[in-house]
Length: 496
Image (cartoon, rainbow, N blue to C red; front, side, top):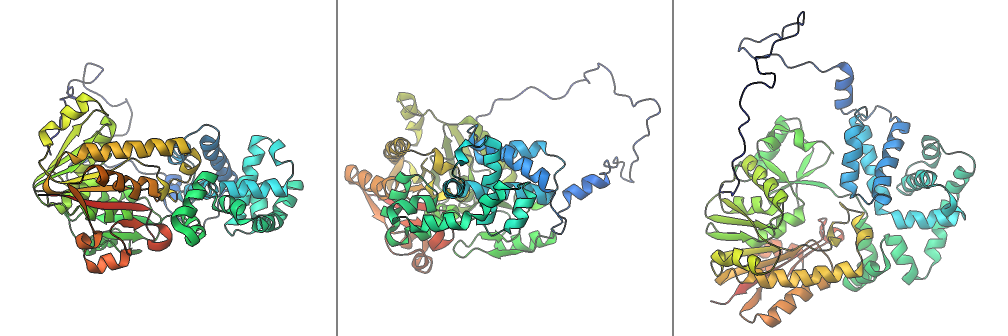
């Protein structure tokens, strides 16, 4: 893989003390095996117990609640992204068992998905809810969310340390839910969908009579999906390798021929096959967008490569041949891509850091202009299709942000269209379900670039898969219809 990295300082040299290291007087010497390797330090019994998943072990609810409060508070009051808030808290909670860590993540995400609904119910069940201190509010929110997701109210109250008035508030949640159901639809839907009013309006515009079903699916937990790295083996071979590591609860994805659904939650990063580059964690919808590129082993550009999930998929499509140019404006993401490419055994990728905009940005693209057979523009967007995985994103978005995204998407599509050679393809994609970021952007582009035309996705993916994806020339995915994250894709062909 060609990169532009500068050589770093050597890590060699003498020890910092200036001389050879010696063991402490009287310290026991490390034993060595027959091959001369020192034994690994043994884990304590407590460490083994914490690392070993045991679904029958009861949760230590006080520790779980404290971690939930810290993580949720980090999102709601400190403005952290949900995944980073959880990572920050769980990294410090070293005494939690794996089942407890999973419970913390699931409860925090569940509350974030239903936050507006939960706040409405508690406000109706407790007329002075807003007057409570922040910690007590959050304890009540977490408890109400658990009940809303089907847990036993008595156990929830006891395990949350709630008594007296607080328990009576939880008892009134069904009455509050009846009040919500009695509201006029225009008022009820945004609260039941747990999203800002402006987003609820757009969901109704996009999904029509299916808006409630679409919003409900966005509030469910997303499945854990992996993509087989076909440079290392196909999906069946990946299943066999995972089974050899005692990971047997997997099933093939319904649409992508490369995906596996992990039916149990586990730490995939600890698996040897992950370390060997045998698979990547990638939603099925993202895999389908990558398949839409249909990358030949010639010259391909991933224009908004990010950390490289689709870049690696394209490299596998190209069978490690040809030139795959991965472009991005963030050096940190580029470095992540390089690391992932090395692990995946990819060596046809050329990474390039490019400026955001201006003359320097245009100059950086000059060597590629008019030469690419495929250009993928997986544009930055609102992320409305990924609310299952990033539930707090809905509360960060506002109409001004959406307008900014649309302007940037139009500019990126026009900018990278200059790289496509005659007869080549420009693939535009987002993880948004909103028309203004998808069809409207494509229509605006086509009105200004008459040398491009739409190629129906069924012609690229094949009639059988195309029939499963639905009607129309574009790729449009959503959780309630396909079980994937929400994605949009369009294939635009440049005239010869």
